[in-house]
Image (cartoon, rainbow, N blue to C red; front, side, top):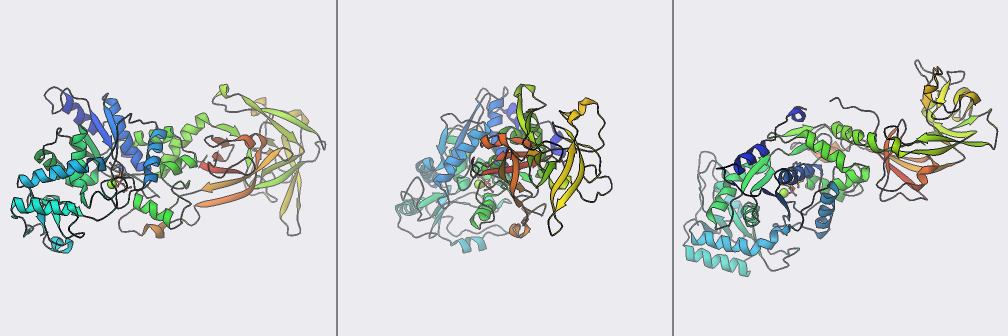
Length: 557
Ligand code: ATP
Ligand code: MG
């Protein structure tokens, strides 16, 4: 948890230097961008990048663009573009009218590539990918590149014909002429264009050559006037190439790339490729399965933007890779919901409780505070009768040591907000299973409030009026992965899945007020945790609640 206490944001420190008098962007507006590749839904790792990109712009009174990085024609999907926008808005960030597609710059990319060829800084190569790999050299041996000295005119001609579609995939590439002996392999004459006869989701079949990310990205940044291109650490080794590109083509701006550590969370994977595999192989119900670390999954689970942003803010901006406990994310959610969620009663594993001395057919109402933290949230009426539901584990036929709930001739217990009761017996079926718990109530204990000064030895338990309640399905989730580090490079993440990450409870009993519950609301089911109506499956006829997080806190700050 070292990162939580790290107060200083090194990115902000760099930017302050850059915009100060004499700095490289003195007097300029700070301009960042968030460049998701639309090949999947955003996950909580992206949220960290969003906070860094949008948050940094905000801090310096600057701008942040949203740019779909659709340079690579293989995997983009329009479905994802809309979902990405929705998720970013949900988190509370806005790009105004600065929404772009990387592919909109393809013509410019092409022109800059031609400029490089003309300057003698790029050439058409005809090594196969395998040959190029063989000739890469190693730390002690420079790469070899037999086409490096191809005359400029010839490269210009071949590059034009590559674009015109004269050659099949991989027949030629365009390579930047940089340094075959560089200790940084990204600088050993990297490929900047390749032939791919593929349909592009926006460009259609206009192109059959596509720029490589390392060439296209700096150009996109420069054309949009980005001052600070903030990205995750895996691009650190690409920074020299980024700089080389903006220095050697005649772009109007020279952005600065700064890297930060990716967010990692234990017991989950944060990679679209892996998340996609979970969806495509049916391990989860979709990208928005409430166990997924995607923003749509977290939202469906009951996470709030505030909880997620607090989490990312506290994790902080680090230069070295860090893995944060999932329990800390839960802690941030609990903290938010504790403030805002309405307290209600629900029984997830019900057993009948009969108050034998309460008149049959009689009913009364109790007024219960919606949220003791927020008196302004008001109160609601809850009905009480002779027939109630309580949690099966609030009763034991044979008490165990220290058990303070219901058992025959056990201690007095409070029914939350109602009466003090005492267990007198129970009924079983032919198999010996408890089907009904019997108790008597004390009519003088109305209100059941611990503040009445009455000393009660037993616990306070929650209940639901069996004559006025609703049935519900409750879905309880635990870690999607048993293994703490399923994302580790040497692990088969699918083998790390927790087969019991979803527990579906049906026949749960919830208080009548929940019949009107709606997606987007959060409730504290007293003594159990925070729950929300499932946005896809819950309806007044079939209530479905997701457990967002339990009440128990396993996180030690
Ligand atoms: P993935 O491996 O999940 O596909 P990616 O980096 O390829 O991730 P992009 O859509 O390209 O996904 O990411 C957009 C931005 O979000 C990039 O700037 C990337 O650095 C950042 N990002 C992605 N994952 C994380 C993470 N776990 N922590 C911080 N930033 C991240
Ligand atoms: Mg990427």
